[in-house]
Length: 201
Image (cartoon, rainbow, N blue to C red; front, side, top):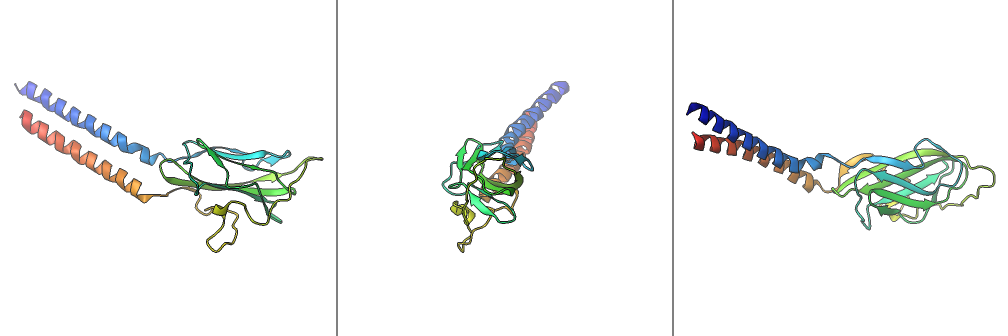
């Protein structure tokens, strides 16, 4: 009888642990935030032909939001102007902007996207524009065409949230719910173990 009780107790504990794994697994995606997989052109590269399209590809899908997603191409560093129309287009996990570059020099691509988990992911990088002979150059504009790249006072900026590189919560409530769910899962697992062990005893 004692051996049977031990087996039943072991089975109860295993069941409780399995439940805990399932419940914790449901909360796990909250810690896997979106990350950059590729950029066109690549950071610190030397570009000699008009890229045509600038893009950032991330590991997760981006929201098709009317505001919040933004890409700005500016340069050269010595006398920066802005290139491209609008804030870019989201397709899956890629944010892209069509643009033609102007005078040679160091250019900056600054971007921001909203991941499907409601987190903001943003960054900026530089590349060198060294057009070959005969490459047609664009004039650019003194202000970015993307409204999301302007501050509240109407002054243009070169970076939509460039100072906040990486991932940050756009909606803190989601994270609070995930953390709360994890705590509840742990409590349920412990409670179920105690109840089953007592019932089998």
